[in-house]
Length: 333
Ligand SMILES: NC(=O)c1ccc[n+]([C@@H]2O[C@H](COP(=O)([O-])OP(=O)(O)OC[C@H]3O[C@@H](n4cnc5c(N)ncnc54)[C@H](OP(=O)(O)O)[C@@H]3O)[C@@H](O)[C@H]2O)c1
Image (cartoon, rainbow, N blue to C red):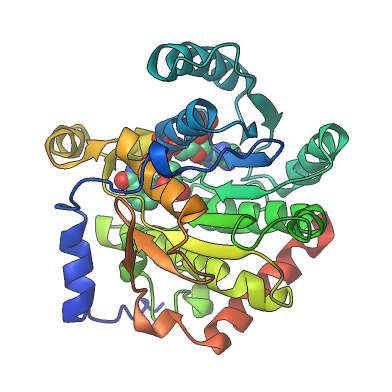
């Protein structure tokens, strides 16, 4: 049995951790968003949390055709009804259509059918927001194919989804002006809690770690968010640098359902220290639209450039993760 080696945080890392508590006001807001007339945007996990707020801002402030990819049909259709009402009252935009595609990112067999449904409806995709995620579930929580749940959902599910969307996405990017086609990967400042190099290769699912203390759970969540950051940095290189900006973010410290597995005491404290979920959408849409964001960048709340932990930046780290993700998702392509 061995435990992962977690690098100690540098002064700059600590500054970034603290920034999340005092992020300042968002400066890049609705007034800065493009019209996106005729464009198509996908948001995974858009039925709640900051995905919901992102869809609302997109629906209110742009003309894009929007699709929520999420797992629970009833919950998402209810969310879409609520979104329509809020878009009408907050943005004065009526009868806004929002599409729904069912997918369970923790079950790789559901991803291809979902993409096929999407491809039957649309012949372009301009922006992909890989947002859905799960944090610190109970010990033993597994994805359908046996991966630790956060690795399976946050990382492998999105890798396969992105992989299956890539052909249309890259084709679409050829018709777009530079900077329009983008992928936003929801990472987190929790990437700093990840094992050295991002991934605990000796025991990727932490199966041999006997007890998931809060510390171990946060390392596992950190591993999945470090992997999301590495995916963001590596995507363009693995696709011959098409006309796409792929970047990662920490959206902020936000009061959402992400804390669903926290204790009641933790939830009570979070109410006072976390920001309303609305603010997270400003970070997402900064990464989706700002001319200041370049390929491979990392941004933090609520639209501020930031740096990833140093041991995650090498091509070697990216190559190792990418090969593993491709190998594991090959059977589902
Ligand atoms: N909140 C924060 O402070 C914070 C900070 C840093 C990073 N993030 C990241 O931001 C992203 C969004 O988090 P959030 O705070 O908005 O959390 P949230 O309110 O819990 O929303 C998570 C979304 O992901 C969906 N999801 C979970 N498992 C899924 C699966 N197997 N298949 C498809 N969809 C699935 C959820 O669907 P259901 O509604 O069906 O469960 C929900 O729509 C996550 O990637 C998270 O790691 C959040």
